[in-house]
Length: 116
Image (cartoon, rainbow, N blue to C red; front, side):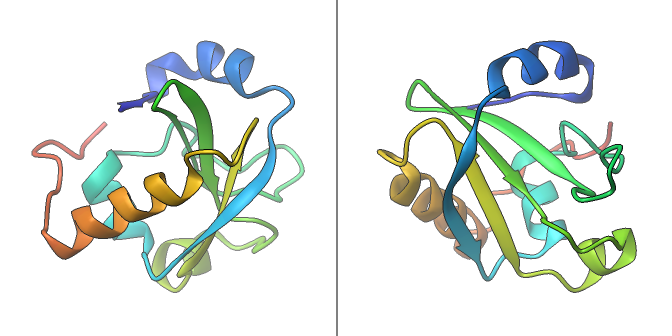
């Protein structure tokens, strides 16, 4: 699995153009996702404020995004949100990605360095 970092934003934008909602991720908080994936690829709100935080991931040769949708509130997203959207071009491995993330949380398989 590759998580696109902040320095990879241009490539991440190119790879995610045309993605759409393919699933939902329930039960993980922002800090859980940071612990597992590192800092979001896009840590600032989108220009329309509909997305506050977004990770871009390559998983099993597919591109996925994990993002909040229409919270319009960065503090809420970071402190309270437990229901994330998953975007992609296909839903083929979405369940496997969800299971991977939930297993990582359960087993405390967090990245050593979550600073960016």
